[in-house]
Length: 181
Image 1 (cartoon, rainbow, N blue to C red):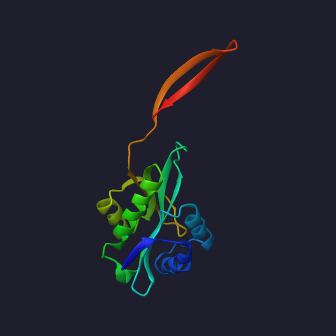
Image 2: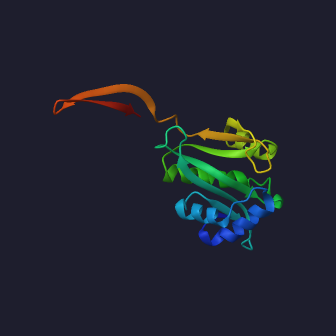
Image 3: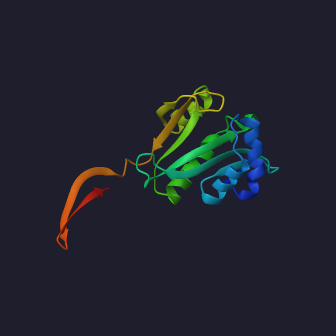
């Protein structure tokens, strides 16, 4: 078993794994955009013949509340059934998590999981330390609810401190709000 960073040349093999395993599928354009924009945060597992048997596709995006802070997002994780329970999903997730931390100054990593997917929920919550952030009703195309889950890597960098710096410049009163992290 070989686990390595995914590359654009792997796109069709990764998409085959995705189509084989998951009901929600991304267009090739999305896969390509992700690999070009954040090449260091997605990984794959391949067997001895070079067939992709698992992958994690991740990205970086702005925080919802504080858009200048970056967060990691796991868009898709999949392992073929015959290769499950070998720890591949956990290893892929940990590699992606490390790459997101090393390459970007992310606050947390988030993902969505189907409410009915007990195996994935267990992996994320029990083995990787993710916590439910909120339930998103009807998130998936078939209407199923999702849990939005997060693992906080560092406490929120931004501490809201209302400190005002008052200055006069050429007779004009200038008030600047200062934020500290």
